[in-house]
Image 1: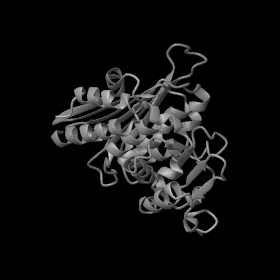
Image 2 (image 1 turned 60 degrees about the vertical axis):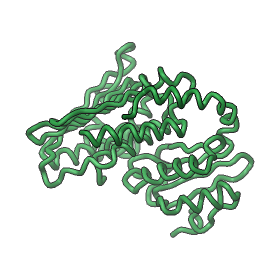
Image 3 (image 1 turned 180 degrees about the vertical axis):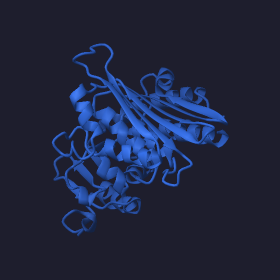
Image 4 (image 1 turned 135 degrees about the vertical axis):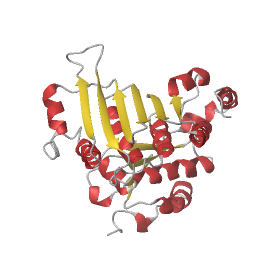
Length: 122
Length: 183
């Protein structure tokens, strides 16, 4: 049985890790989560990003958040990647399957996956 | 939308936009096949005029960006099954200490147009991950049992550790999966 007591263990373990979170926000992955985004399938996209970032151990520096309607509903699900000192990258018509490559090549490797971006997808 | 859990995700976005600090989500399944979904919040609320606009599909459109098409969408889904949606709201101008909105949607879950409840765990973990400072109270009951998740309770145990810590989210998913297996 899962109990609240297990959260005590997590809390104690996390105390040592708190310092790691200071760099959080250097990279931000933002998923459009308005009616248009949700209907187009944004929920699995966001959740897959969360799992991928957590599994790569990047949760201390990369945040995954949501926003409202970005205004290009026909391209939903839309994902924007913000990085300090760099131009914003907009990925469109996202699917959970595309997440792994973006995390690998863009978030870790620093090179946006051009073919998934708004300039390339039609 | 394909799942009831996606309608919930969408309706809760309105509560978040309204600046809610506490959001309640409940699903109640009855013996007779009726299912009630309720989202309550302590956000800024709406005055009567706004509330009337929200209920009219297509009237709100894009000028009232705060609301969008989400509510008419939910109304359509509920009414297609022979159910209905009721929205009550108290705006913060008039109700300084007691403002907020309550959206209640009744569905006939035996109707052919009833969307499956779907992946409610996915909806909840997403909401908690992206809104770690909001307190969520979730309750699901059916004739065979009930389960709940209360982030306030978790926060008391966790202290300074944020709710969107990966390990905590993992716990939430496991906890809900386990609870659902007994429902």
